[in-house]
Length: 92
Image (cartoon, rainbow, N blue to C red; front, side, top):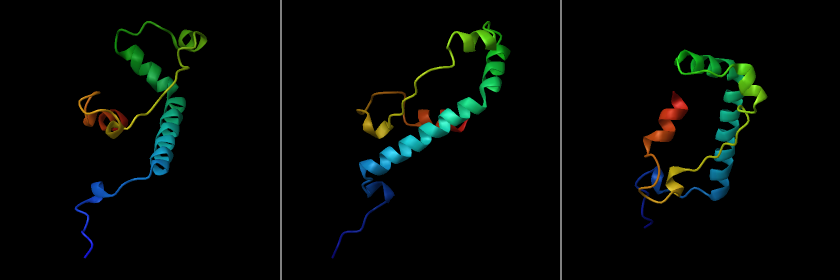
């Protein structure tokens, strides 16, 4: 008799599927940032600390940055910001 898996967490996910998911999430984040530049800058100004105009931010290249996604399961245990970090920031 074949042993039954206890949960979905017991099913190995192929690296190609993980890479596909990571690329999708990254595209979603980039799309969100692109579509929400004005709102992001407006919230920056609302903080009371924001001193850079949107024009200056764009001219200085401060809206051009590199993003990377690392799955928490791929990090050494005890490294990073904790399991809830990614979910909390993505769902906000």
